[in-house]
Image 1 (spheres, rainbow over the protein chains, first blue to last red):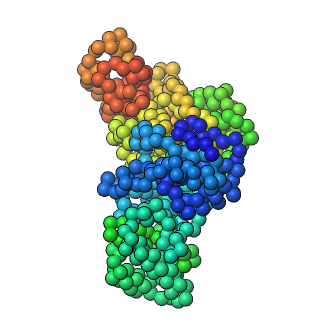
Image 2 (image 1 turned 90 degrees about the horizontal axis):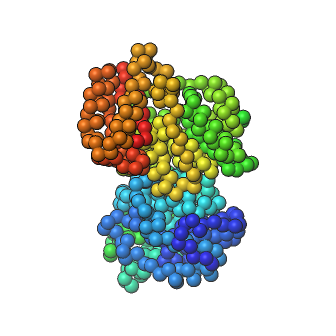
Image 3 (image 1 turned 90 degrees about the vertical axis):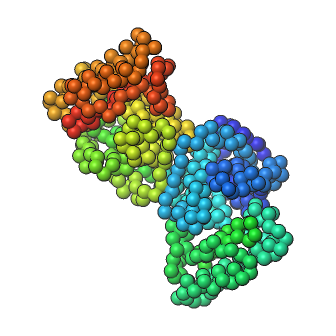
Length: 271
Length: 271
């Protein structure tokens, strides 16, 4: 596996090229994206870049876990051909151009993190232009990010095929996340409840598509509140436009964000 | 020459591909861009699209001159291989993603037309992604547009080489523009004064680089005012960042925007 710092070296002799943009701190979710890309393409490129523009000033940019040599070993073992690990100055000699996606980026994560998705959309477009992949791979754990990237690619006619893969979970159901390491052992024990509640909501709705979504949301939020979560949002949405849906809708998903201690967890499941 | 409506048909068997984005109503300025592209590339693509998002509601979108069959004949004669003439619905099934370039887009035209450059940057990026050219050609008549496109391409790492060509002028010096046809015959007779004044400012500054730019601006603005122009701005700028410069600076240009009757004219010259 080759490690590249300079985007000018991103030339690939074989195609198709699969691309997995990441912020490092790899777990099974990342590795699954890499392995899928390696199966589906002749060359797989992974970027490792902790993008400062998608963090708000009060967020955890400086604390974000970083371990490039460990990540490089894991990527190589997953079949990655090129690890693109640029510096912040390489990616942002200036920050004068911004890509803004309205609508799909505004609710939920966009409400809690109002500058987040412009940072995501801009860096993903920059990385796409540097790597020029045929396919790009994203994990559905960040459902709204997937929706924003899909919308940006459609709206700006970016010539790339997007592939979204289901969330990889710990054996107890907790969605894998680079931030899970920050959970205290008590909170780590409670954290899987988030998924268990979402899974129950999904099965309830499947069993009775006419059930009141609002009362399901109220009951589940109250339940999680009693168990120690501070629920920021819990909703049934159309993942194409990230709009809430009032009743069952093909393809709809339950989404949630909740704080447990100081740690913010997000998750989502299909119905 | 092939006329294409559907971006899916924008596949080119030969490279390099040169691209000239236009709003039609071709004059010698456009034709010079096309001929240069035809000389420098194996395939030349011209887009003809009157982009609604770069017009403000009170501007002249509906009156913008349109004559596709005349334009197609002129493009073919200039050596163009593909004329891409999409509908508004093809380009904008939605308008949810916007590219904003700060700094370079904010003064001058950006002050008079605050939504203009986001519309320009977004449509140019979309067209670049549809056509995927090796080189793209722009006329320096729209100096700030050139600066905004250059900045966007750099900031977003768009893989295209930009070529900027000097303004083509009528024999009396008036910069060619699709909007010149709207000038009354009296105003058409006065209009070349804009260029004459710019040319004199450039030679004055070349002769004496220490001269006060501010007094030159004041004198020239007053002169043009007496001749019937309403000067919106007149400035010496660095065309890389479109910031005013107080004294001579290598590469600096004089820029002007003025109304003559209801018609707005812009022009610029190198020093």
